[in-house]
Every structure is written in C-alpha cells, then in structure tokens.
Image 1 (cartoon, rainbow, N blue to C red):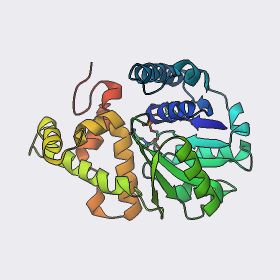
Image 2: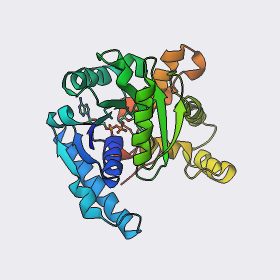
Image 3: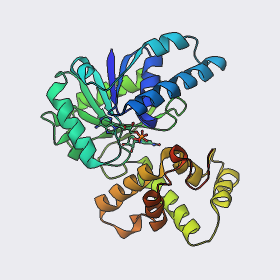
Image 4: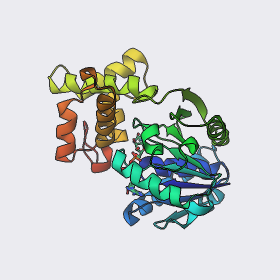
Length: 279
Ligand code: NAD
C-alpha cells in the first residue's frame, strides 16, 4: 500500500517512519528542502537506535521504503494520505483543496491535527465522507496511541479504513465519536498544561518544580512543560487557541506567557529554547 505524508516535520517524519516500518511504500512531502533533510536524518537516527535495541531487524529496508519529495506526484497514486502541516486552519484547508484535486477516489484522507475541526477541514473537499482525524502522539515511533476522530460527515467505511491502517501501523486506538475542539485527549490535557504555564507566569513555581511534581507525584514519564518544549510551544499555543475559539469559553484562554514565548521565538527544543535551554 502507498502512503503519502504531507508535512515532514516532527510528526510527519515520525508517521512516515512508522508506516515504512509497517511495510508501506511511503512518500514524505514538504515545502521545505531543509525540513526534508532534517526528516531524513531524524528517521535514519531513529531507525538505527531501534535496530540497536532489537526493536526492528531491517533498518535498510525501512529506509528504502521512504521517498522524500517537494513534489506532489505521489498524491495521485496514494491509498492513504496523512496530512501533518502546521496547526493552522488556512494551511490545512489549502493542503486539502490540493489533495482533493489529485487523490484517487478510494484514497483515505487523514489529518493529524491536534485540535482543529475535522469537519471544517473536510468541507473544502468534494468528499467530506472520506476525511478523518488520525491524531498520533509524539514521538510517533514510541507512543502506542492513535486517536481516531470522526468528522461530522465521516462515513463508517472511512472510520473502518482508518482503523485498519492504524492496526497495520501497530497502534492502539481510541475514538472520538464527535468532532469537538481538542477531541478527547487535548481537550483534557492541554488546559492542564496551560494552567502549568499560568503557575510559571505568576511565579508560583518553576518549570523544574512543576515537572518534577508530575513525575514524582503522578507517575508521569515527563512533566507537562518539558513535554510542550518537545512538541513545540507554537503548536501548543495554536491548539489551545483552537480549543478556546471552538468552545468560545474563557476557561480555555491561552496563557499570555505562551503567546510571549512564541513572539520571542522560544518555541522549545526545535529553536534551542523554551521552558528549558537546549544545546
Ligand atoms: P512541524 O512544524 O514540526 O512540521 C510541520 C512541517 O510542515 C514543516 O516541516 C513544514 O515545512 C511543513 N509544511 C508547511 N506547510 C506545508 C505545506 N503547505 N505542504 C507541505 N509541507 C508543509 O509541526 P509538527 O509538530 O510536526 O505538527 C504537525 C501537525 O501535527 C500539526 O497539526 C500538529 O498540531 C499535529 N500534532 C503535533 C504534535 C506534536 O507533539 N508536535 C502531536 C500531535 C499532533
């Protein structure tokens, strides 16, 4: 089966890698040559590490299953397309309009959005029943969860197809039956992270103390502020804004500190600085 990922950043490269490990023929498309180069390096490093840990035994074959491209040819013969461009509705709509013009009728059209409306993204296509949310978790090669999100017009066949793909990718799945902002996971998790940002902004505690508290007190593998440093402060802010605007409820207002950090370019690990510094 042919699987095309659009957007080869943190998530797109992880999704492409997992699909290649599962035997799909994968193409990762990105507008930026630098992102494609980074994706290539990130995937080869990860595959080598997994092979050293005996979690995969065919690293060369996995890498040979992936093509990196700035061109869209693969879209017309893909069986599955997973979009992972930045968390902005205008980017998502532009991408899905283009996909709709090129993809074959039988193709599954999935978005990896963390919080935006699947229904609104699907509305720019001529086949909203074929559009679904497939929300992966970072780092995709290590996190078992896949959240399936049904849009307002997503058909039962499309949901079943997405579940079959998720199964092949080796993921454990949960389903958000309705397309409300933040779906199941981020609707609950992001407001908690946002509250941690308020606690830092108000000087109640440091990121180190908060993260340590979550590790030692709640048994989390990583604290909330370190986690959004890894995910990207910009991605977290955009997702929080989408939840706030989607429910039109002040309890979801994004913390001003998140906005300041994005304005300052402190986007987390990818820019070398977020709540922590990275070399
Ligand atoms: P990212 O910034 O790491 O990657 C986005 C990539 O898309 C970049 O490489 C960029 O060059 C590329 N891009 C931009 N416009 C494009 C276009 N028109 N066509 C093709 N490529 C384009 O972002 P990310 O963290 O990988 O997030 C991508 C999506 O995944 C977002 O919707 C985000 O909400 C979602 N998501 C992120 C996480 C996370 O932890 N970061 C987790 C789950 C879901």
